[in-house]
Image (tube, rainbow, N blue to C red; front, side, top):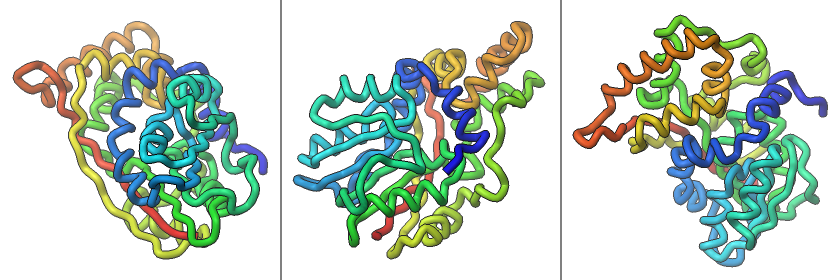
Length: 270
């Protein structure tokens, strides 16, 4: 299956950014890991595939439960970092929706926010279904829409500075998109042939330093980071000025930010 313009953009966005992600937004994305593993029934002896393993947070937690863990990621710097962090897991380079595994090889498959980064989410889920055994579990997370206030902070700063998303970062094609709601994600899993689908919302406050949160964007992490770093110096300075003003809304007495976030967790059986 040919990659989409969205897929090609994702490869450029994430190239070489594993360490920058680990030091910023990666800490946020690790929050749902225990619930994700519970939803996929990951325990001692289970053969689990973690797709889009990133820096290996899910793989490490699955290994700690005694699971037999394989992880894949489309970005080589992520693969290298995860392999160092989780030496007991097998970490490989692979790009959805084509995984280098035989049908039904795994008891469980997890994907922590990976569906946000693929050009054909339905095809990606169909591939996850292919590699899990009959009766095995698939569990995934995505960011929900509308976004929570903390997740919207950087976007608000970009908008307040009059900056725009650069044209080389395409949106997901309309025919491949889906509602980022409980019903929308549940329907996506059902359309991939999965059964016993359950989807729930999660809300939490991510606690971080303002400069750490800004640092992820300033190093070009994700689409928001690429939007920030593509701006001319004057506009970049304006984004930072607005970020400093807006982030005060979330600062506690110590100055640390408490950023509200919301996501969806869905699980289903093959």
